View (spheres, rainbow, N blue to C red):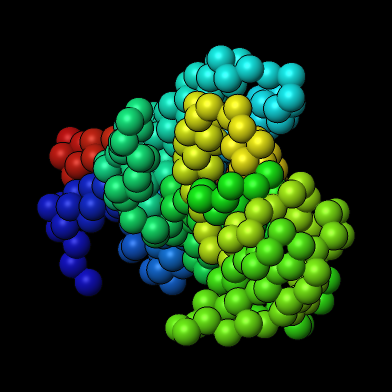
Length: 402
């Protein structure tokens, strides 16, 4: 076999270049801390690395979503707490106004003035925004001011009844708030079954309490009227046309009247023709509750009939305020449940992130001890080859010719 000098030089240089390239690759691995920098380094591991990196990216987005929801829910919980504190003050003022015999009309007007300011304050709370300028209680329409009106006009809800669901894990979505309709507008009336009212045309001093449910199974939802045919006799008619008489009896002041599973008590001295309403419960917004209370307190109450109507309105308002407070507590409980779910989801995601990071490290990260050993071996081999080449390259037949 014949070896030329050119072939020898070319082969030696090519071998050294390959060793240098391998050494450079090892040095790059050490510099990056990764053994797989391109799919060519380990095709099978590269596929799994891409899957794990995608999982990490999704987890990072879920973490951002969770932080966004947590911020809005915390703001909502604060708004609900402020609304509850405000309702507590409204209840105190209503109890104060219930001292009908000791307060003058001007005293009640003063109470009504503070209640009106509380009404405006409640509207401001319901129109709160988050750090991005989005309304907390606007449903899907987060850029629409949810509660409009106020002052002389009734407060109305201008947004929708939806709730945005934000994904916080691959299988879980959580609403980032409640709509203003659910929080402030959809409060059950009365005791949740029925409400009582005094007819505005009554001339006697009769008043009616808020009533209680005796047998819920016997209750037939309808709008009933208790009418006094004489000062000592009453009859109850339903809401049909023509109306049907469903009960009747003799009136004894302070004695309860029971019919169709409910009980109400009428006090005072009703006049013939006076009537009282027992209506099925619907829903009433908090703004209307306070607004009606303000209007009632601004009316003069000098006659026995006016005092009786005011007493009934105040008693009903107290019950409605309690309903609103309980309603806010239920909403706050839902917010707390969502925050608790976020805590659990964040904890599970953090644990999963650790597992993913561990699996990714095993596939991608470099074993520094093994890599440095190989790099040193490669470096020594390359230096030896270079030194040998410099010595051998100087040899020639002319060195032996004399």
